[in-house]
Image (cartoon, rainbow, N blue to C red; front, side, top):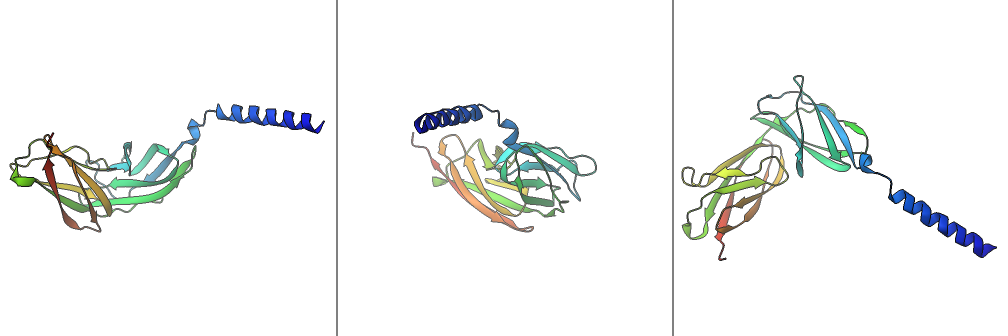
Length: 195
């Protein structure tokens, strides 16, 4: 009798686990974030998610924003309010729920000046830079007119990994950290691709 009960319990447990695995958990994998910027320039303002720049919000005339399909778990908002102000806001998103962020007062933005050179003073053409995890992607680098210098910003306080690629060269990457209105130069050197 005990053996029969154990078998029945085991079968029910396996069936129960199998049924749970087929449930659609998609609504619990993401949430929605609501908030408001206290000041912004509508021509420049941008709200996205650090690490997932394709997750973006539009800004309403009163500064309110809604960011949908934010993956559940720890997250950070990347906010460009104007040419001079920006912010990053850490939060935790509960799957299937909405999160209300306190009003965001943007702070003085920072700027990275990206200086790119090639080994042996080789000419670099069609180079592009990307700040990983942000909307600043595929930024052209004009190396002839601008001597390989590119202004990247406005940026909220934080550390950013920058990657540069150009035909005929291996990709180059570096990290630049900026804080509270700081302007910093980040130098990267491209190495010719021997292949």
